[in-house]
Length: 528
Figure 1 (tube, one colour):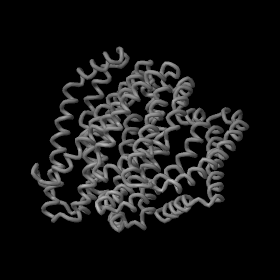
Figure 2: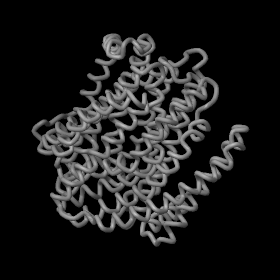
Figure 3: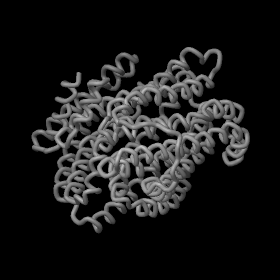
Figure 4: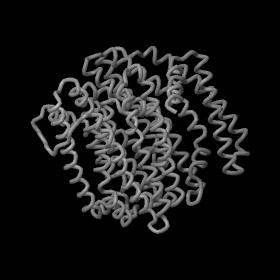
């Protein structure tokens, strides 16, 4: 562990690849374990009102975590904290961090108690809004079990924010893996006696361990804890001034998610769960690479913004956009063409039926179309936050609420629950285009020519790859469905063949981005 800390602390701009490699590996394990958790849930409980109840019981505390903790940590705390590291004396830095920690502790204890006490009332509200299409009894039980998960997850996020500001990425990135694995263990061991309640117990236990895992590394920050809050501290006032509009912006996003879930819930049993499963599969490539790049680049972008290094920010933006596109465009191609066999392989067993496979795979197609834009939106928001400009993303997000609700209402009439996924993608496109236009007016040219050339090569390579895997799958499909083993071998072979072809094509086109990928692979080898 000490070696990992030392390696992380020695991070420099030239070592971005190494840090990204660690984060990619950690997030890959986290996303895969999350997929395993969903497989276990779907296999044990199917997709039903029961699993919808768990989805909502976890969504509500997680919503508070996103609104308050992520608004404070990701968008406000990290930029201010990195500035303090350069300019503040030790006592002032400790006072600032202690104030933030203690405010968060008190606030999220209060939120946890509210969720614990008022779960029955929340269940009544959900039932009325969703036309009684939710298991209220199961919801109340699981909501109370997971009430304090919001406290654990929020403090874990703050811990990760401090460590990332010190260029320590390893264990914070691995922490979510613990949450998923613990949940799986609890379901396997307790599902016969407790049913879906085992999911809630596992989630709560995993959220505790996720925080505990990171605490020993805080010694690298050389901070000392005291139960003290100073609201007059300039940095404390600064982050809470930044937090309000950021919270509203994230609130707009989460309001969109809530509307999506209500539309899905009203379409019948299991649709909320189906929407969540599709989103988690979509998030596998998005989370593994896009989040890894952004996790490593954001502290760098924050420092560049603090130093008013506009050229550096443009370079970071261009790098992030091109690398996300390099991975996400072929991922879209593969997911659209192979959505049905992917969902069949991952989930269709026990209580997860062929009809469930058809539903989720159809949703997955329209979720996956937004992969590039979901990734670009992460970069754009972080750049605005690094500039301490939180109002522009908020204004754009408010417009997106109206657009999302209208699109949900319109598209579900023609596409059922898949229309909700398409609405999510279209709203992401709107946000990215709008924020890019505004950013370009603020800082000037963003390297559009270089990005456009890369995009053209990426799209061409992805199209050729897509044609190859389409015809290859059509030829092998009749053999693949003869058994689960054949499906695994053939589908994996098709995916690997497509990936190899894509890499060869981009290498032949002499893309700069392929050097990044090869460098990433070399770093993985060294880490192993």
